Length: 170
Image 1 (cartoon, rainbow, N blue to C red):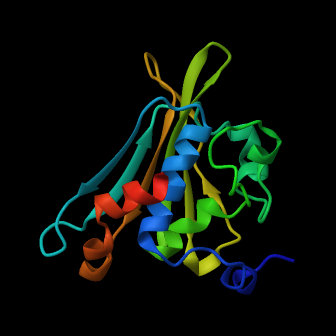
Image 2: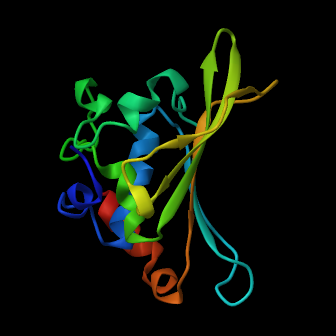
């Protein structure tokens, strides 16, 4: 069975830059044409957050258990992708662990001619538990996903150097 020890021994990155890179790739794999990385707040003032925002297809709520509930497995393995062929190992969504003890996905997806939004929450306290909110319709909304990772220390903030992240993408 999958438990916290399974995650700890699975080789999930402990590098902040690799974690951000993983989420950028995830956006492009979701057919995004744009992925934006923002750092909001200051360590000594507001609690800072890293937000990786994409305009991809979003995460269908009826696939949440296949997407987040499976570990070391990825739906993307079946897709023909010319990018990121060395990954898709089913653990990238847990990369937030290199940065913070929790993460939130705010995702919007198309269904029945409309766009619906909901949140997904993961926490290091119980890595196998996926919390999700109810989906609500978003009139005039567009699809995509925002991954929000709260940063709780200045050391992590100092490690986030855009030139180094950019090199990892190439």
